[in-house]
Length: 172
Image (cartoon, rainbow, N blue to C red):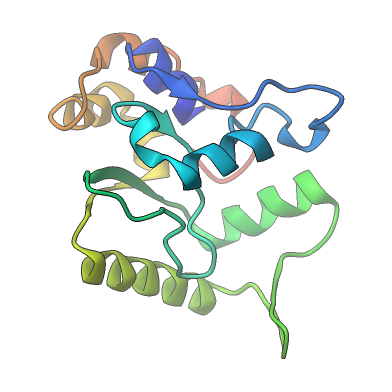
């Protein structure tokens, strides 16, 4: 919903259309494989646009470039993440590496967030605005007014898109 809000607020957002080729996007506003390759090869071509990128297990997946990223880091309740993941994928969430498989827990989530912020802080090319996802649902206008201090959006138009009924778990 966040990408739809940013788009309604006037930002240019880049994401894949939901197609038979990409059924797993389910309206999540992710980049397609081709868009992702372009983003990594030429991040400057995405300058001034909204792009949804997930921070995977503490690693910021943003290519280095001469510009500076502005990132909204959406914090969520770990239990809500688990419920949402299980509903979307039909299975429990876990972290799998070459050497281990670890179940997703609140402690792992906290570690991921700390690692993400540490990684970004070391880079020096990322400015974070940290927001609670639940707060956007509960006080959309107030939160989009905060976002409007960093991005050129119309907070009223962005907030109008927020629909608590669309939130599947844990946000109210």
